[in-house]
Length: 271
Image (tube, rainbow, N blue to C red):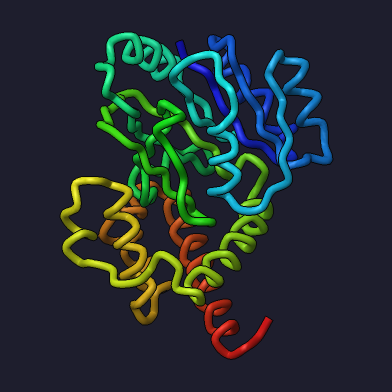
């Protein structure tokens, strides 16, 4: 009843675990961004359908993936470093069989881990739409992409586990160096950031719309890296997650500072 879609780029380390976690599906698709390691071979050996596309930006890549031909009406959107728990896998298979015909997607809670610790308090955005009818979903925004679903969204209760540091701190920093460059370019071009609304940021019924307006307003604040660190540590309670929470809050603040510096560089006419 559920197909699985995984986007990859040099994921030979993470992909076997991801494939094992969704072995209950008989229709697994990999959209690979021209990996240079054994990603494609691992996927083919597991019986997955492997497609290849040159990466341009995150939203466009994901929309191309949603346009693939799937065996089932529902698609689970998964990253290689994510694992649906057995409880979530069972819940998803149950709810799609019972869902009203107009239901377009399901939102779940993702649990991020660092040093083996669930970042229960430090994680800023734990809720994601990951189970969709592909013809009714599309992505917007080139970086930190946002999914828009045409129709009612229901809620799942069981968690999706995420291991963003599975390749080490250095890999996380390298990846966020790329992200920060793309974020700075978006801010510089003012794409998607015009006229943010405080009302929408606080009260819009859609979580992703709230996040879009919150991010746009946040980009207008001075001392953003410090504000983000204090928000994560004190208001969200990252310190309650111990060393993992403190580390994560600090890394996120560094990421924010990279965006600030690169945006200033662009405005000065730099690289």
